[in-house]
Length: 259
Image (cartoon, rainbow, N blue to C red; front, side, top):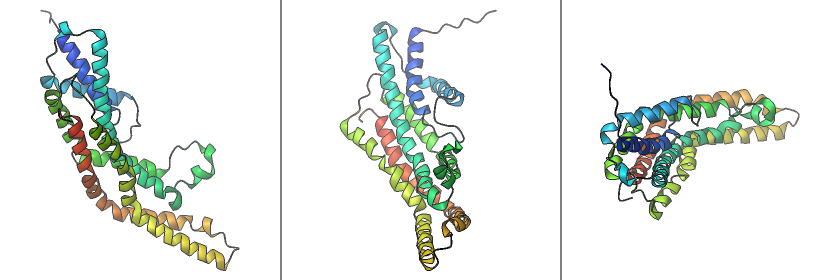
């Protein structure tokens, strides 16, 4: 006995609209170890989340829908997801910004700076910061809160009703400063210690100009930076949670009907 799979046009349209909304966010999901882009894990994740949200899919009238309207609505839905993804990306990029601030001073990216033909895109600290940002995103439960906001938005903000107000756009843009402020907060103790080391090296170099202290002190700066980062990593989750509050507030405003 065969199974008759009869999918209505309204259901298919609802699937496409919800998929467009989720796909815009899936581009920026900080999956640990996965580069940004449309890799297979992100595609599978977007489709899976869309199917899980099936009970929340809006009821669409296929008779009142044509191709130009459908394309316009899909672009608007993708804009919602991309806006939410950018808000989350600002939070996770703060860790990479902090690593970038101290990478050269600590000596971890010195080789890629001096020898640009090495083919290395980023230093080891940037790779560790990317992994840490992704792990904190999932460990703090922010992924569940964002998905819950998406599920609620299918009722409070159905397709075709999205509008980006000036105040909401300003709030989203202001979140960009989170990258710099949070990144500096994370590595400020390490940056201050490296500054004191550099001043001490400069004074020693004035006493004896024959010593190549910059090359000799690289192992010391790398070990000291690594030890201090290992000590400070205990407060990183707390800083992440503090910064995630405003980000989640903007995400909920984006996915609400009142903006």
